[in-house]
Figure (tube, rainbow, N blue to C red):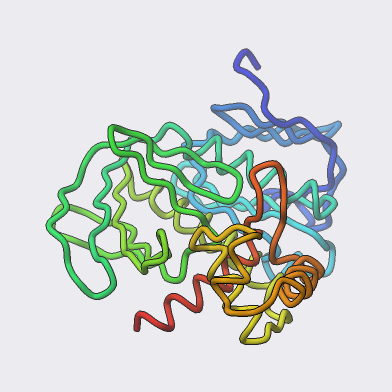
Length: 284
């Protein structure tokens, strides 16, 4: 393989071309052009341009008994649809998913309308050219006026058909407002993959916070931090004394909702998701 290899590991996998759905141990190699799945006795090469769907955790019914943590890759082989199911540790599956989507989508030509709506108000923003980049926890559309969508801030997304072609409509929190952006990619295949990536990332974040409960004071603190308040500002912003702020921040850190690094106090992805849900509720 002459092109740069971006993932290379050993795992169990099964192809629907196998005589049995029982997985075999083999080598998984991903480059920027193709995916290779090899055992001692066989090698299957899948061009990235043939992949039309990627899913995590979903396994075809006939293979469910054989797998645990999985990533399922659907691809076209001539006129036929094929699937490959790869099993590995949860962290390895997560890393492989990310690099696979990056290989598929980063650098893709796009058109962006941002913001298409602010709250319920339609804007007159035009579509403008951009290049898609997949980043940890975000998708970025680079161009003269770049747009970054933090996945924790997404509250709704849907593919819609328009006269000029399909677009992905994404509603997300941006600087304390609920805004809607529209994105079109160079092919429906890549637009579908971007939609799948958003769905997988959002579902993973939502699962992490579904059991987290916050008091009204804690939620007000999260909203204040999202809006730019620093540790020293919170007492005045919330109308409480400094000892109460210390208690609130300690509780929010324990719940994994805030972090204080080199750049100061900030929300984690889980904290951003909770705030995005609150903003969306207020704006509807």
